[in-house]
Length: 133
Image (cartoon, one colour):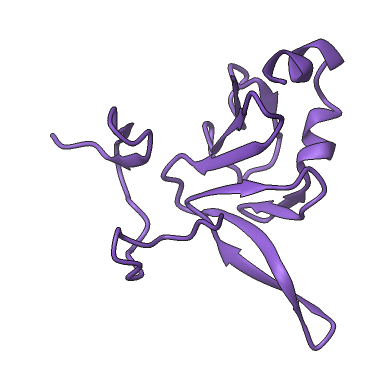
C-alpha cells in the first residue's frame, strides 16, 4: 500500500495551489489490489465526490472516507479534479509503487458533523477522528 497526501503545503505529495484547499486536505491510499481509498483530513471545506446524476446535474456527496474510481469527479474545497488529474502531477513510479461509500456517518449510519480542530488517525480503524486533548 502507498499513502499520498494532497494539499496546499509544499510538504504534500501532491501540491494543489488553491486557497480553498487545506494544507493537508486529503489522503489517498493506493491498495495492493489497485483500488483508491480517499480520506478527508478533517478540513473546513471538506472533500466531495460525485455519486450520480439527477436531472442532468451531478449529485455531490461530502465524503469523509470512501473508495473512489480514478476518473470520478472530486472537489477539495472549491477545487475540482479527479484522481487521474492529481496523479498526472506525480512521476509514474510514485503511483505504481502503491500498486463503498463514505460520508459523515457514525457506525449506525446516522449522519454526523465533520470533525473540527485537531484530528488524528484511530489506530484500530484507520479513520480520521477528532484528537482528544
